Image (tube, rainbow, N blue to C red; front, side, top):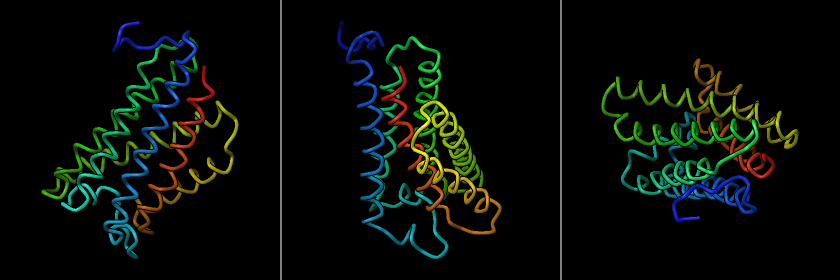
Length: 196
């Protein structure tokens, strides 16, 4: 096999490589977002909490925020390049590609979202799409692996809170991102390990 050539699912290390890349993407995301929160906790722990995107528009946190999203997208897209044989693996590959693309789009739309209303609307729209995608993908992955019941329940709670937040009854954006994104990450890693 030449360097840069996608691994085939038939090779013994393909699943392990895919799972490693998926896990590295999610661990990188969590670690760099944790650095952002440590550097500036006020963005997400105020009574009217903001979302993660606040970290992408401030000098103190823009580098770890960028690394969080760029590494998550990069590792995930690399994991998606592994050739698959089964129908569920092809679906999982689509999940990986869609997540990677939406994460990059979130990153790109973050930088200018505070400049004007059209850019803010675009970024919020991407945020809604990735939230719905992560929840829908979590439902599919949960049905595929039939495990991580409490993790999936946390994602359900997060999605319910996201709806309430979207319509303005509460403002717990960071909590919804944490619950939905955390559940999605754990389900993504487990599904990668179990899908053949």
